[in-house]
Image 1 (cartoon, rainbow, N blue to C red):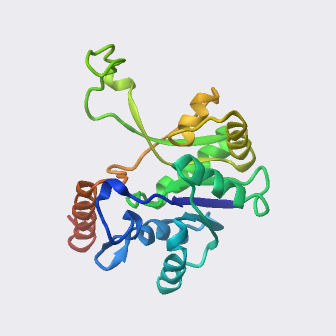
Image 2: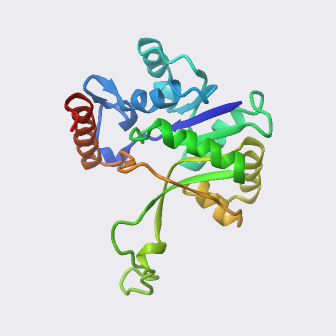
Length: 238
């Protein structure tokens, strides 16, 4: 069994949207979370979906699932204080649903610019290597600073990548890692960061271009422009 674990438990404070969390903002009348879910809903290798959502917005999400015909969502659970906590809540909710050797794809609810091929490649690489971390080659030079004032290091750009999503694993292994982090009081930025903290070898999947996470207002406008450009390519063949 293969499950998509979509975490959309953030309040989106950086989005400056007073009326709605960022995952419920609409583009052409459809919420961002639905655009994201549709990729997994229509993928033939995804058996079911678990969504981690803000508690106050679970009813809203349930209504949207019915409205847009999203049928693979089998459980909606409340998010935690951090992204780490939200993912852990989702993994705990899967405990009665998943076997240890089942595959789970962990993905941001506000990262809608993925495609069928990226999901398939994540699944393939997990089966072959045990995990799959979507990553994109750095487009600009990256510097490292220990104090925020002086440049300590400038790694070669051809060795630098940005971690994206999905980040995919065998369920038993990633669930145990989050359980261990809970015992240790360790918090992570995302699942790849957690693997790094515990020195778990990771295997890379090349990201789709513009695999944007919608965090700030500018991200929303970039997403809209990119989406409309892709729609134009389909219609006009450009």
